[in-house]
Image 1 (cartoon, one colour):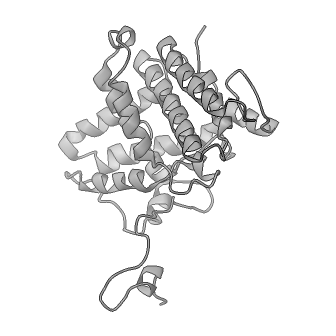
Image 2 (cartoon, rainbow, N blue to C red; image 1 turned 90 degrees about the vertical axis):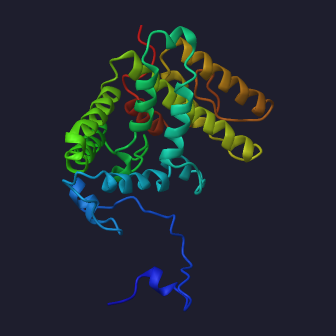
Image 3 (cartoon, rainbow, N blue to C red; image 1 turned 30 degrees about the horizontal axis):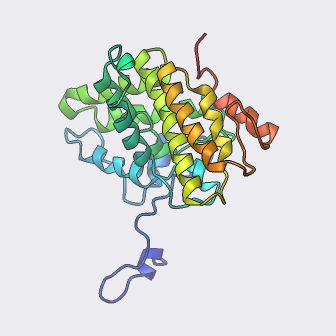
Length: 273
């Protein structure tokens, strides 16, 4: 049997010259299932049915190593991970404006921000332009959350923690409570922040304006004020230079196909009249 790439890179002193931080998203043949995805994991399957959460803790590493795919299309290959995104979201929820904080359970929102993309540990970050139907995306993510909360955590503390995680994730997906609407808005605002930060770091040589579309899908008044402030900051940065803008003051061009994909992905999001 041929040695693995890591074995090929090993030196006599045992030092391995390879990027151990690269953990690929599971690629499966045919219909996507959790079991097929788990079979691809190089470190082996996680312990199922255990009363210990250690297997679950190992799975969480994948959120640290899986990149947010929207940026990789623009050659930002060492950009934020899924857990980077969720961490800043959780910190942002702590600063909910007073007019909103008095109406919501902020601690539940913090937990929701840390849980909402957990399924991407196996599914990967599916973006609007990946040509995966929303129903299929939902199926993969729901089955992954069942795997995590029932097969990995089902016997931990009598399954109570897993049940709570699954319920909070479902609340986010259903988008009916004020807490879930707030966290959905925070999700979009975190993206807008990262967009501006990458553009500024690139000193105007990288236009990520297609992502400004998400501002039109921010629903709560308090969160729209934050989004407006970020877009204002971006416009000041791009002042006098040609750039793409898709937040209502449209400039530049994206394809009609991409626009339709964005609309389908965010269907149901935004201000409720």
